[in-house]
Length: 242
Image: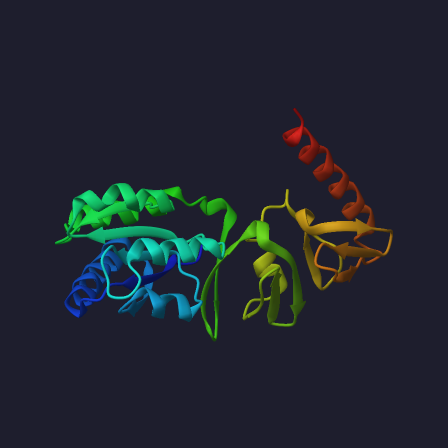
């Protein structure tokens, strides 16, 4: 598995707190051998305007302008599914914080052991078998395998197509194919590996995906594709039957 990485935002109006958290995260990276990419925001408005997606947001409860709770509510309104860890000098604020699906609540000044435990708990909550960590020239990405529609090979490169984006990875199709579970993905041609979950329909020569795109089925791969997709449908129906 590729090296784990996390994208973290720190939203707090105290610059000294930014430095404190940065130091703790650097120490955590070294002890856990992971990469953490951190952005800092002085208030909720700037975080909301960024429109970036983060794995974890450290949110101050009291800030100038909109407070942490209001910021969290607005994030949740746009289907923001990042983990939120509230940080405050006021323990009584914990009750309000949990109304916005707060993962943890930490009290200032930050206790290193409690911060590390919160991050460890987050890592344990991830189903690593269903996460693919990818690196591109633009940065590092954590992709849920359930979001992958298909892989398209092009020599030494592969395009990973999800509902949200297309990523061009400097790995050939075979290298990426080996990272995926055979029960959920299959090669349908020399250039395509497809995700069963996103197949809307297919005939003997072509696949229609749920995003409207299509992929050809190679003659050499057709029989195995048909058999494996039928098995997938049977397993899916068994799991979802009452």
